[in-house]
Length: 72
Image (cartoon, rainbow, N blue to C red; front, side):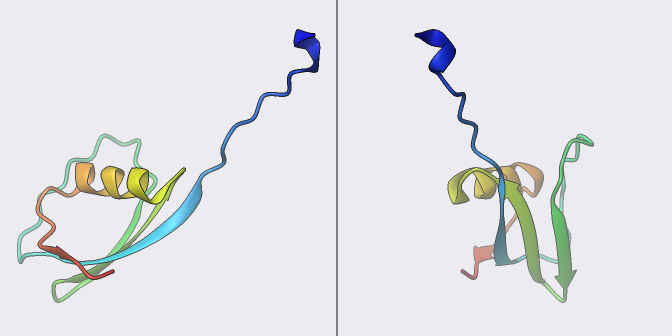
């Protein structure tokens, strides 16, 4: 019976977040991030691959500590 079990793995989707950043940004980078970030005059957009939107937001807030506010 166990040979008929098909493993199911979720694939990452890319979530887009818009947010405001202060003038100085502190980032924690370990080298394992796969996050794209654009910032201009305090407005930023990030594209984060993850299984869910909550997981993507958690990854982003782990990398950037001082997000002022979310725009989405």
